[in-house]
Image 1 (cartoon, helix red, strand yellow):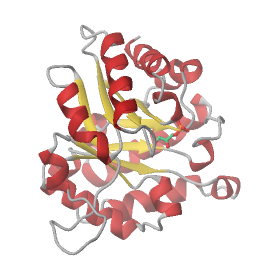
Image 2: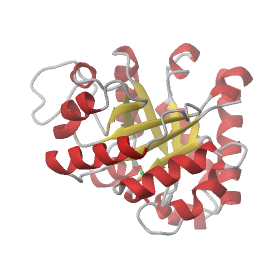
Image 3: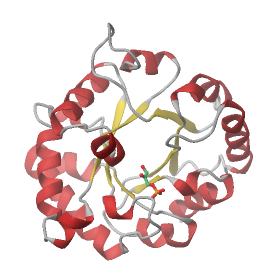
Image 4: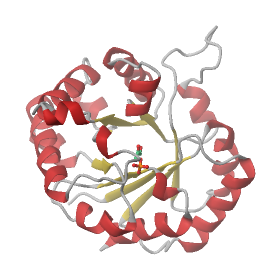
Length: 253
Ligand code: 13P
């Protein structure tokens, strides 16, 4: 049985004071006895160090939203995996559709980032998912297939076991229009099968596959009760402590 993992991707929201307030509210409302659900928060870079201090001795884990694959050097504006580690991150979101579409990140670049993250001891949350156009053309399976193949190229079974996969259909992100539990389950099951052909059934069974895209308290229980949906990567609804806590609660049922 896989434990559920609920992660909050804050995106480009919350300055330092707002971050402190949100984390305090999440801490206050979190049922620490509920160890069945792992909780990750991914604030912007500028709040990571403070967040790390605030969640010390709690069950909340820290993740970043991006990184560059090089160790250091002349890469103005970029952040390395070891820098993230040094401020207490255990996770990093990679391959998010906003990075792919707005910032032009390719599968090859994402692959390099995944390798670099793992090498530094970070656990990647590797995002995949099709656009509306691709879904309407009947290409959803083909797209996730390609993203998995290219994103995980050259990654060993042992390395793969550090990765969380997040299926986020692009058409469901920030649109209020979530995939139905059945639509999501269909792709999650497919992803697990694909993983099994690459890394074997034992790895596939252990892999956490989160769903992301307009997850909210009203739909989180139904989504996460699907057999192959092992948690959620939450955007908008993680910016309010109440809705994030409700989603975490629904993962515990
Ligand atoms: P929304 O929950 O706002 O749709 O965002 C999902 C997402 O992109 C999480 O990474």
